[in-house]
Length: 497
Image (spheres, one colour):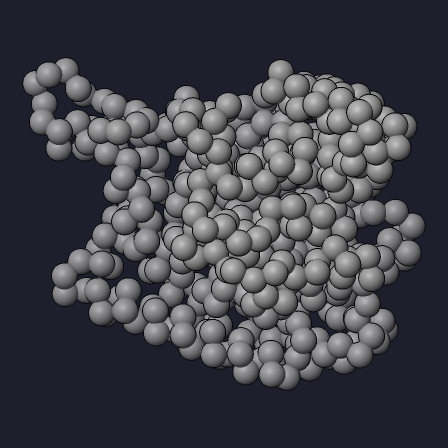
């Protein structure tokens, strides 16, 4: 079992295709791992043992029949509990949807099934994807496999923890302000936010519709690229879906190089609040890029300093609109419906019982920002800042091919440390938010361990919209250089569970 769970997704797929392993053997190994360690990690909210084994048997039947298997056929995956699944509950980490089984699959779920990926279950997350630590889940926090007393990032901490604990070789996350990249950084894994509209949002429970984006999570750059290719593409059911070919991400991941590339370093992505060890590993990564043949260019993007403020007006405003649908009338939790109360009273009681503190905080903030007399002062102004940030990126990408930065200002912080300090929590997304506001693509991959605490540090790579392949080209080159330097993937150093 240990040998199987340590394999990459690409290796697993190759062994299944050749008959060296069966999909059932691979699935059983990962289910056994979940059973052995997830009580401590709490990466999963729901494990679909029978469904996963049925999918695996179908893959084995295809191979035995001589059918050609796809690049990820038979590979297990952990799915963030924000995508609808008609055979499993979709709770979005909230009590208001506890036990709700949707009547349809999200487009991303359908694409995974069509690719013969084996869905193991649904992973834990901050409620409605609102958070940076997975502590806002109504079902309890997830632990970071490097140190179970620390956070695994958020909102997709369950997906990142499943990867880092070898419970799954692949996972799906969503990124509204950094919720794929920040968990990847603090768990030593790879996470990619595709270009906005590159992966369908149909069937992804909405938090902030102009920012939300699903994407791949993995332990290697190539695995992330294979998953990216499987889930991306135009979807007529999503009005924001891009009707254009998927960038050649797998080809880029197989041919990583930075020779002759112009790499930008933004001066706004360092300074007060950044952990010394994080900046040390980032500076070493920049030197590594230079040694691999990249030209490093210093950039000044002054509007990036306003990104956090703009984000925390735009995202709550859109959340207050999107979450209005949870009214106790159509689906989910219903409280107080005893025949004596009005619909308004039932709705109020249900939301009081079903929404957690952070969700209520953002709904109230967003409703205030959108209210008569304040719309232009708050939401309107934030949208103007968003335009300035987009323009700063456009100017930067006239000078460089990609931008690099630390993914997060610090390594994983202890569970509970920032629970009562929302502003400190929000600062975890300082480096990731500008990309969401502009709609660009970005990746986080491991770039070493911080000397102060021995915890993973993430390197963020940002590329222009629809140039997602550049992320993989640079990421693969950096990853290969690290592996050559240390002789093994960084994750091998993670404490065993």
